[in-house]
Image (cartoon, rainbow, N blue to C red; front, side, top):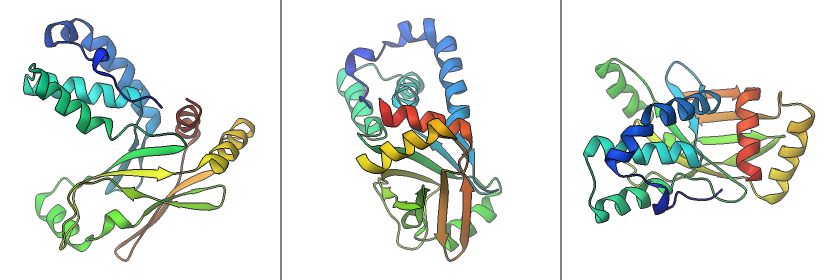
Length: 197
C-alpha cells in the first residue's frame, strides 16, 4: 500500500473546504475496519486513507502549517500505513473510569507483546511499533504490524473470495487478558483490499 505523500496534504484553508465530505467517507471506511474486541479493547486496521485523515486532522487541530511541522507529522503517521503483505493496526485500551483504567494498565504490563492474528490457522504475531514500552504498565494505545507474508496473503485473499467467514481472528494471550475474536466479513473485505493494493 502506498504511503501518504506530501503532495496529498492540503493547507489548512483548503482542507476546511473538503473536510466534512472527506471525514464522512473515511469514517464510513473506519466502521468496516474497527472491531470491538472486548469491553476493554478495540482494534482499527489502518489504511492509506485512515492515515491521511489522521495527518490532516492533526495539522488542523495543532494549526501546523510550517513545512518542517508538516513533514514531521507525515513521517510520524506514515509508519501506520501497512507495507506489502502486511497489515497494520492501532489497538486501543478503552476504559472510561480513570482508577479502573490505571489499575488495568498496570495489570496488563507487557500487553503489546501478546497480540496476534490467526489467518487460516497460521499465527502471525504482531510487531510492536509503539515507540515507548513501559516496564511496569502498558499504554492505552498500541501501534502494531502483522507481517503476513506473500504466501499467506495470497491464500487469505483467495479464501476470502470464496467465503469471508471464519478465516481470521484477532488473539490476545496475556495472563490477565485472553481473547479470540473472529474478524467480521466487512473487516476481512477491507483487509483483502489492503493486501491487494
